Image 1 (cartoon, rainbow, N blue to C red):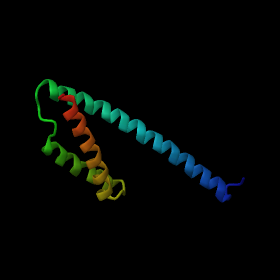
Image 2 (image 1 turned 120 degrees about the vertical axis):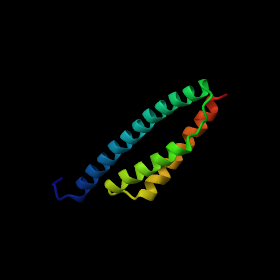
Image 3 (image 1 turned 180 degrees about the vertical axis):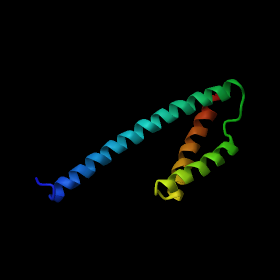
Image 4 (image 1 turned 30 degrees about the vertical axis):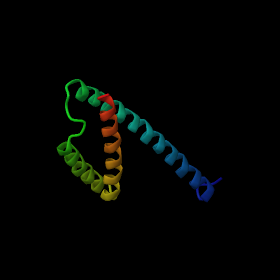
Length: 96
């Protein structure tokens, strides 16, 4: 296969996508480990499971990061909101 071979190009793009998918999964797993630790602290000290002010700041920050990265900020916000809702579920569960 030569450099101009579309199948070779497709294979390289797909290999890169597969690597990026793995990075996303491992990054999400690490993020959830950290948020579970936060949930345990909140449960121990009877702090509320959600922090709307922090969530609002995080959404604004990630929208800006998305814009800077040329990613649709609406899409980034949807993804973050989904993650935040999962975190809040975990924090409620940590309370018992």
